[in-house]
Image 1 (cartoon, rainbow, N blue to C red):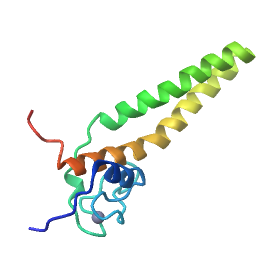
Image 2 (image 1 turned 45 degrees about the vertical axis):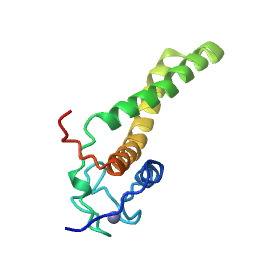
Image 3 (image 1 turned 180 degrees about the vertical axis):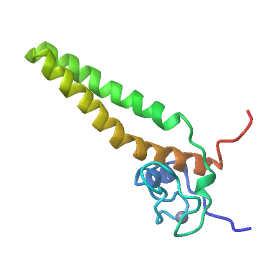
Length: 124
Ligand SMILES: [Zn+2]
């Protein structure tokens, strides 16, 4: 059985942010937009076993909400743009931010879980 290196949380999360393998920091971990590769193409670490589940979307909603809502209130109070303009702008901003952050945050969560030796199938 091969032993793959596990670095500290910060280093693993940083590798995950870059969507790279938290073990070798070289191989790309995603096969497409969000699907994890079964194994790292560079070091064969079994990253596909890690189940991040709902945590990346939760973090995405948390961050996007804390960016979009204050911005929306600021723009409304300061500039009073038309309702139609806002009905087009804010969903587009929220969608763009969400789709941009989700894979990055999923990578970070996978890196964090890798550093802790978690797979996401642990029973309490
Ligand atoms: Zn690797």
